[in-house]
Image (cartoon, rainbow, N blue to C red):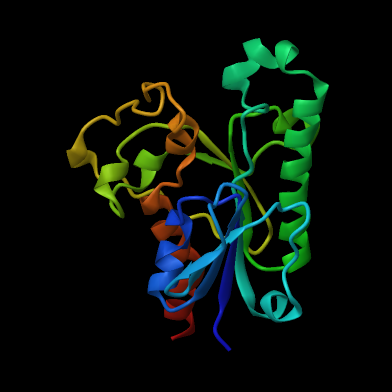
Length: 212
């Protein structure tokens, strides 16, 4: 029975790469997918997380879960616009985050929810970990940029050890300088590959080494 990783609000598929390369089945769920399709062992499902539910088989095989809820109306970087957005948009964003939290508890596998610094710290609880993509450049040198990222994790999740390649110099601020346009949100929210490789290693390769 092949292990399965489920990624909620995942458009790019980057989060699934280290799992798929290790032979896992992966599911990336996002309303922005043009259609439901499969690439190798990665299934891209066009669905609203409020309505899609894993099958019994998927629940039994799920060994990892991660969620990247939309932060448009929660990130404190946009606090000056909060009043103009209205309560419905705020409520929708909190609902999507809450669904991720429910899934993480429901699936009972190692997992995390990712968001930038946001008002969730006030509405729910403070994050368990804070990191930047540049903290894991040993795994991926192209991730040498800063983006303060908060992680809410469950008890089974192992936070990877920081692994910076200091020879790359100071991290840049490409996220802050991302050009305006329709793709700006997705560019800013894409998951850093180095971090996910470090996550896979800490949670699964490390366990294999200890067991051996």
